[in-house]
Image (cartoon, rainbow, N blue to C red; front, side, top):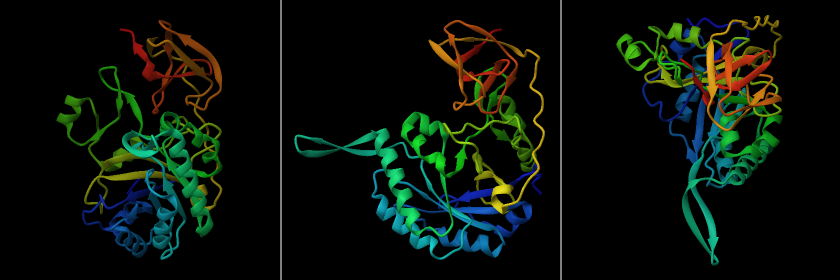
Amino acid sequence: MINKPIGYTVAVDVAYSDDQPMDYELMKNAGVDMLIFKAGQLGKDPLADKHAQGALDAGMILASYWYLQIDGDPGYQSEIFKSVTDKYNFRFIAPDIEQQKGYSYKKVKNKLRKKYGIYPSNQINDKAWAITKYIEKWKKCELLQYTRTSYIYEFSPQLDDWIINYSLWLAQYPFTINKNGDWGEWIYTWNKELADKKRFTYCPTWEEYFELYAPKPDRIIDLPNGAKDWKIWQFTGDRVCLPGTGSYIDINWVRTDWLYNIEIPEQPIPEESTEILYKMKFTATTLTVRNSPMFSGEFKRYLSHGDVVDIYEVFSNGWVKIGDGEYVNGKYLEKIN
């Protein structure tokens, strides 16, 4: 049984790629309270109804998402999404905004030319906004937005202007410093030999995996600028098999106060560490120091090339504490031996 921290429960999100046989009742008994299935991408997902009915029969809460194809017509995609969702009662539905590459079109000498590559940021934003407005016309439940904060920063900063007005389902996989002192994804494995060889985190059971990745008051998730909080955190992508799943699966923490509309007492935030762990050097040109360990934190000052800082704390999102109320993104620093 999943050991859930106070205020959180667990959801899995599934799609056609999760085509191995699933025992939804086993998942429910292990502690999975919500199943979020993929309704489609351009066309309906072939396993949409199977996942939906299996979850309902097992007594899970149901939700659904639509993978937004940036080079597709948002109105057409919305209509197919609607045809799937009309059959069921959902806690929420969401467009999945994460595609970064595909075909874009440019007019050259009055002719449209197709080119494969990274979509223009305004195209991503316009399509995401358009499908959101289409969905709002027919939705019968809450509308969330699924994306990564880092995706917004890198591919479409304009999303910040409006996406924060919706409840957020954010993907962010914890990072840490491995045994070599390098930044890398904190990868779970039950293979001790592989863990030692690849410097992965050794974790023999899926129960312990949830202990490692449990939400904590000091475990910060990057939020889009202006956003106040997340409702669902996809903390692992295709890393873990749970009881009842036949393949690796995406797993999410869900805030129970939002999910069930109940009040959860606030948990005390532990005191910040004052012990220096080690020193690191900044190797790029300039780096913004913020008042919290996330991109949306307020500006405090800049680091310059060659600056050496004390590291007091390392957060799961890769940020580090370098002073009293001062934080920077640790991927731009090098550890000093």
